[in-house]
Length: 104
Image (cartoon, rainbow, N blue to C red):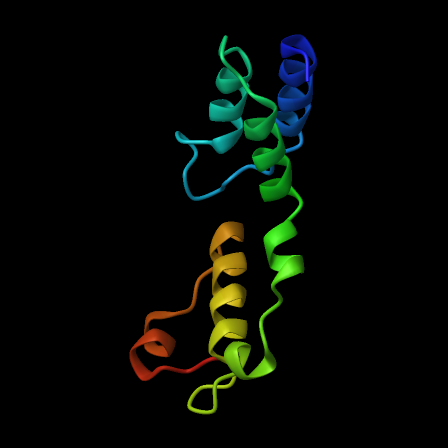
């Protein structure tokens, strides 16, 4: 891959990268954009960024239902994702729900 083509590809990957709402001052998008200007940029680095963006590893090695829903707490990861999404929107649970472990 020619250096300028790798630079263009990595720049397009960086521009399509989602924004992290929890770290507004540290964005992977900014790192990838600055990396695209590096003189020793390789096609392997571009391919690795593309695989990360496309969740290729998650698709290749999917997790079993037993892993995602352990017998001891079957809704644990579902609640974790739900809490993360709610927190990203700025909504939280009242203190009493946190204290008593109440989940809706």
